[in-house]
Image 1 (spheres, rainbow, N blue to C red):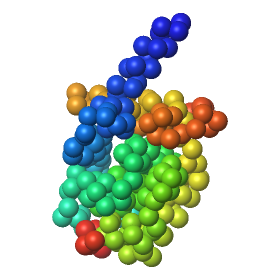
Image 2: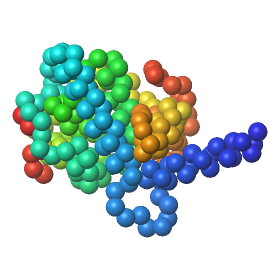
Image 3: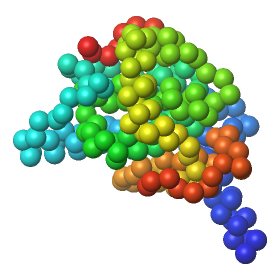
Image 4: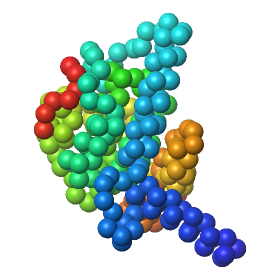
Length: 218
């Protein structure tokens, strides 16, 4: 039993290293791999949703997260920008993905090219506030995200109420998301994070809870 636990721990640790959630001690350069995998995930999700909406001839409901047109900055570039200027931990992006999934499940909204950027900047900011020891204020994140401070304040409140303020991420869920994320290269996926890699303390619940230039179009 102990051997199995040890082997599982090594496997999980390797996944965290592979995603760039833990320092390898070899002088990592460039952005952590988790960013490109997350970008791919969001891009596929947007493409799938827009195709479904078009095929079914369903008009997407407009929310506070929707812009009048899609930003010129792509999802990958936008995520890289957030990481570069926010200085948040790579794990924030995993947690942000979890939050967006939860929000969508609770509200039934569609992630599209008109809304994905606002969901990204809002979810990463909320994640950084919840799991990082140090973080920037809303005004700074607004500049990074290319929105006004007043708008980001409204987005944050709507996001939190949409999540019912349920920001806790269990160790099991984070681990599951990371394992699925590691498989992104071969096909498809979805991320609650590891204690050491993400700073979650062991006293947290381990129960899975339910399943700076403007860049945003106005």
